[in-house]
Length: 290
Ligand code: NAD
Picture 1: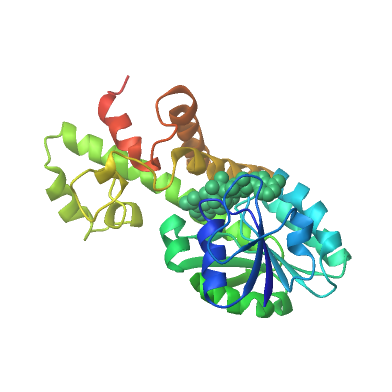
Picture 2: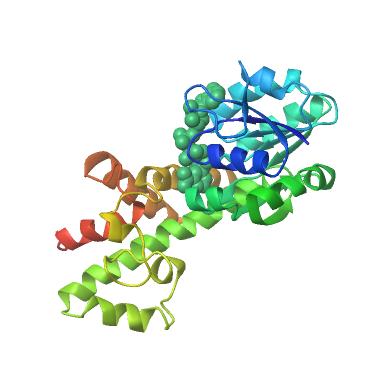
């Protein structure tokens, strides 16, 4: 297939490289990032999109996605598919899908889980919103970039799945970190705490696969001075998206709101910016009940 790829940063770069490695013709555009191996440089987003069967975007937020969509949609051939893999608000995802459909294009929102490691290894999980036909067109590309693609429903359903997942992730990371800090103060050895909880009813991905305590459990950013990994500010972005969606849908999400407030304080008022989101543990360690 001929692919236009816009946004070649930490995630988009290796995703585009994997598509090129699999034999697809990839033309890329990014304002700043270098071209990955095998990807031909286009002079603009519109040039990357011209003649493409599928245009993939991997951009920082919904406002930038909307601006890029305005440039690429008029350049795309009728019947081609615009597939956004960024994490953005549900409203932007739906607005861009409507704009693409009105121009005779297919559209998918297909945010990912798996981080830079998954993007590089081609083992991402895609959660996808949009039509069956557009999903079928892009499926072979999902199979190159990832290990699983779940068609969640109509436009916006992929972003809905992503922000619900990441709301659970943020809440669970905080719960895991505060439990370790409490265990410390109760004199409980961290390795024993991990041994018990990871095989008891408190187990979770944050405890078992991404343990926030250094030297405990499998290797994680905690073992690398809390360098990201998944940065606290990205966690904050996703929690804000979840609360924006909850507001719009009139859903009661008190734990998600509290997690968003805690990550906001951590990133903006404390020393969390640039740290992995699991660095909540040293934050709690330092604190008493206040
Ligand atoms: P990044 O900042 O490394 O990459 C974004 C790229 O977009 C940058 O290279 C930037 O130059 C480019 N860009 C910005 N505006 C542009 C424009 N108008 N035209 C062309 N290029 C433009 O970010 P990332 O880590 O690759 O994340 C991308 C998306 O993936 C985000 O929405 C993020 O939330 C999501 N995501 C990231 C991770 C992760 O672990 N990094 C995991 C899952 C999802």
